[in-house]
Length: 453
Ligand code: SF4
Ligand code: SF4
Image (cartoon, rainbow, N blue to C red; front, side):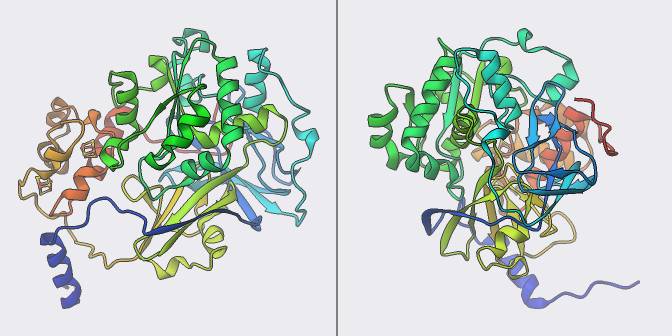
């Protein structure tokens, strides 16, 4: 029987890491406050399925010419996806997404035309006094209105908007839980007037709703002076555990919405400041939502940089723009270091993602999951107070029915348990597997155009 050969140094380093306490939750050393505009790539890949949120059906076909901002896919209730570059539809096929699942996608090949969105794409500004007109504009501009449910939840339950409770609280997030993602706070700080304008529009669209804006500590006085007449300002704690979105929402509401339940079913809408700005652009007829901001950071990156890119650009394209190469890193993680998804291809498209965290440390891939040493650290740190060590061992050994009794569905995958685990067990992955099996209970096989939303 053959057996694997091991590099002794690598194994020793791995063992050392097990007992050596890791620094908690990665922080940025420094960052560039300027958001850099990235050029159009040769092609964009635009996924049509956003698990748990929305599914689109292509409204274009292979060979069609498309221009930036043109609607290329639509959901059953009229939410749209727009082309993010000028070009030709090269293919509509299944791709692997940054959220780790397969999805049908529209692939657009750049035709070299750099011209920006023309006014005609959105046909002028719309006022907010007619809510239905404003909502339709937001949908057709690719800004999913946060106060309506979208996508799969309609698919699963067939509920209509009128069946939902009215929105009583809107929370605009001007700070992201992980401080390796700077998009919200940079946009908040650099677009004060437009954010104020967006808050006014929300007030017009949702009269009577409580509007809250979260901001980082260092923008407290700016927020108080600029936005406090338009929204309640909430400054989350500086540490990650207190800034996790569900924790912030709990603090603002004074009650907890169960982890697996949509905010919207509880009369709450949560949207990032970047969506608020996109909403203003859409209502003013300036531009559909086709570009996204994202912060590139990592332990070996001295100055984090935030870029704005056409959605559907590949990881490679975004990194190339900064002179970075995926091969220089162990693994790119899309999202934050605590909650992101490790990527296995530099061609994976980036869409509604706010962070790209580049890991550059020696990671020792153990053949098996290291045994739990019962230290209890995971359970101690869990904000949901669940029996993390018990549940993750049950899942590991396939005892899903027993695990279910201990409510693994309360986990919202914040990653704090894995961060403190001295055995570096894949706790979040085990919970994810368990909850995916229990909540979704299915896997989808996609063929082009089979979506019905
Ligand atoms: S990821 Fe871990 S710490 Fe976070 S909620 Fe789930 S079990 Fe608790
Ligand atoms: S899973 Fe990790 S942190 Fe939790 S008890 Fe076991 S060894 Fe400790």
